[in-house]
Amino acid sequence: MPSVPSTMENLGLFTMNELAQVNGEEGENDLGNTVAGTEERQWIRPDLPSRCTWKLGMSSAESPHCHSTKTEAPRILPNILRRIGDTPLVRMNKIPKAFGLKCELLAKCEFFNAGGSVKDRISLRMVEDAERAGILKPGDTIIEPTSGNTDEHGEGETGVCVSSMRWNVTKCNLILCSQVDVLRALGAEIVRTPTAARFDSPESHVGVAWRLKNEIPNSHILDQYRNASNPLAHYDTTAEEILEQCDGKVDMLVAGAGTGGTITGIARKLKERCPNIKIVGVDPEGSILAEPEELNMTDKTQYEVEGIGYDFIPTVLDRSVIDKWYKSNDEESFAMSRMLIREEGLLCGGSSGTAMAAAVKMSTELKEGQRCVVILPDSIRNYMSKFLSDNWMCDKGFLTPNDLMVSKSWWWNLTLQSLNLCAPITVLPSVNIKKTIKILKEKAFDQAPVVDESGMILGMVTLGNMLSSVLAGKVKASDPVSKVLYKQFKQVRLTDNLGKLSRILETDHFALVVHEQIQCKFTPPSSLPSTLIFLIFGFLTA
Image 1: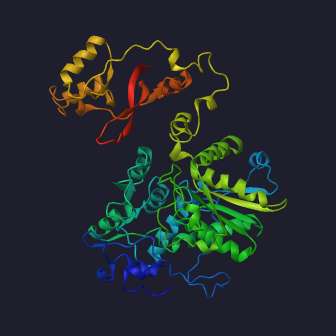
Image 2: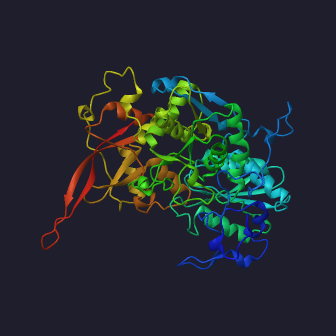
């Protein structure tokens, strides 16, 4: 690799020998990057153009990278890190038949790595390369920004560093408490960042990581978005394993793209050894990684599948080695994940379903005797309360209650109109907490809706929350109930069936029966702006 340039605008994919300069050990002035409208801050963009000089057909002697060789694991492992790699390649049996495929469909099960995901490979390689280069030393701090919803990389690198390094992970607020608990159990310190922050914002997971790096002595950002060790881990190990397991014969590879290291590293090696292979990259709707750019045109701004897709192009992603892109959606991804669990017995995560959903469509062009390999990145562990849950799937609109029951009770399809609902007690936001508590006790209710003068729903108050808030000194009894509102609650309509209500009351204590109304406000001289509001028709408790 060429030497590190003097300006940040020219920085791209880097090796560990360059990492010392990138992290500021040499010449802190090189790290200045001024963002319009903000004070000058020291950081490195994760989407700079790559300076990698690798080309298809280049000999190993000409390669700009240092490569590692695959070694056989001993019968007794010296530590758990030796359980990273050598993941199984499993033949799919029921799914190919269900979709009428003629080719052989194989799943590379990366969740059999020690930490449960494909990210274990790059975590180990990045840390070992940094140690060999003399960058990481015992007692140093590693800071890693990991995006949005997935904590695979944070867990992987924390596990690698658990014996000798201090570990700090910056993550968006959206991640589950269980994921945070795992990271903390491994010894990591967690810093949450706003989910909605753009990647180049000072408040983003990337921006906060660089601020911490500049504040904490002997700290380093190994930077999975730009680190050459990311794709090299897959070029040297994952791809070699696939070639060995398939006796050198692979006709198609399907993999999701996040940082891009997995698909870049594997695709480069496979294209060298299997010139006619077709590489399919999978990118969720709402992400911008796919090419041509027209594929990314959508009204969606977010997606539920974790670990793939970005709102920028990571430096390590080499899109030139990808022959075709497939844009995925949440519904097909989670449906396929559940199918992999049910039909093939593979306890995999949502992004595994994304890759397999793309594979069953793209591999229809393959003939009998040809072979398609699909990368399954992680396990079900982090998603037990998400797509594995029928209620979560219903809440997100990926399933309907009717999808879930083979034998339904006699009342299941009756609508809420069949219920004899009483007029609900509602409270204005200006009513004080003391009076509201008195009303609820007199009427033997545990909760009540809070509405404005027009009847529009503002939220809910519960007896327990009001009492505990007063006793804890958070509010006064004379304060208005608007200070103790719950603004998240389940709503149903009169046209919904009792089956849907039953599903809601399995997990929630109550649900509001609402009625839609169009409210028009006359504004001179002639405009009639209208607003859709929801009025309370009834109130149901478990």
